Length: 589
Ligand code: SAT
Ligand code: MN
Image 1 (cartoon, rainbow, N blue to C red):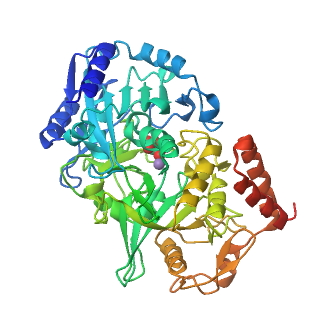
Image 2: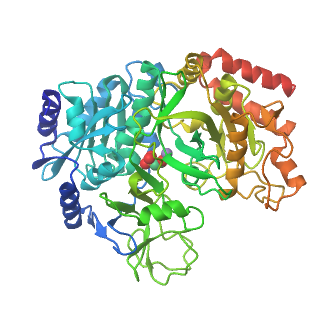
Image 3: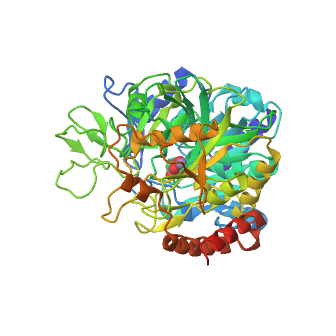
């Protein structure tokens, strides 16, 4: 083992004072060991893992967490750069020295009586020059097992690190799960994250949002690439050609459903490469190439069902080397299977809710926690792309941005060029739902769906997007979609789900130059008849409403955009200011 990894382990041992140290190797035997340990141990009075029905859900386990620890804690998440301005108004900030003192205070002796797991892992396929080496420390066996599903844990990581000191250090302890002593601190300048007091995915699996997005975006800014909160899919047409897309959506917009969509159109197929994170580099030929640094899905369970996402349901029922975890779902006690709202239409007799209580069907509360999750290996996915492990990534032809909006934003439109696309992505707004914080129905600006995940000043981030566009030789087309527009009676105008593929098909036609577009104030719109509406019971009037650009709505929208931009002062690039000025001119403001 490299001296720097050894030194890191030694330092952590002295700090945490664990009873024992377990260095993970990624083997099958290790998975069995860790599961056995988890089945026997309790954290906070709860058994860490319970085996589920092996026939229905092979190699699957149930985990339930402390009710105060079920989601990311954005208000306790900090980016600690030396200079506050570098973190930007989009991040909480404390100076690195103070942050470290605070965290070290929490960490000292925190693993007494516990095992310290050392997790060497690679984000990205180890053969790839875009992959990154990491080591996480944790005292949670649930986190250790989850990391094995979500990333490439084991010897390859140690080999890749060699004698280098250049690897990500993630330091994590669940502490006593006290929400008043819960912090996630990022130190981008030191390639380091410290996290205390939570066992929840985004707070504790440090390879995910913390490294792959917050630290990753910062590294990308310094090194000339992009770390994005995006799905990656390959769309195969009847002529067998595959067109690769990226897609970014704020939460509750059906992002995972799109990543695993089964198209209704004959001869088309969607190949899945990722459902959450994409690292995007400019390849030798000047095109953008994307890899998914992760190896699993950490998906929201409620709403995932045999109707809405049959491919994910199949993924959850498949079996490989990696156990599948269900966290804070309900349990159907007649079958010992996980259960959540929306899984199927079948009536279930006996449920216990996510806190282990018998569920009363007349209760107004849901049986599964709204943010209950599954953690499953991507290799279980029947639609996994053959290019998933390609070290060069896949060449991207289109980027789809979206939001949940009941008005204002049309079903789909295309940016006029890259800079205009960056502008459109920078002004994404989405209605808050029960799954996100804040009041339901408010519009939250969420540029590129990255607001909680951009590890540096978002004004600089916009400039970086523009710079990548300048450096690339061939750029993908950028599209904006809104599956959620409603009529005056609050009814959805578009059927959504599998029908969304009709819009993707139109995008492919645009990419291949098979159809023209009409220029409107806000971008390029489909020509009449260009979207395949075959066998869809939708009238002309509805289509008109779906594409309507309401001047009054847009005037209000522009006021909100200006207010959002003003938070970043003169960091907003001139190109984006110009786009906004042009928009104002068109709507005569
Ligand atoms: O942050 S997580 O990755 O744990 C889940 C989410 O909020 O997207
Ligand atoms: Mn996400």
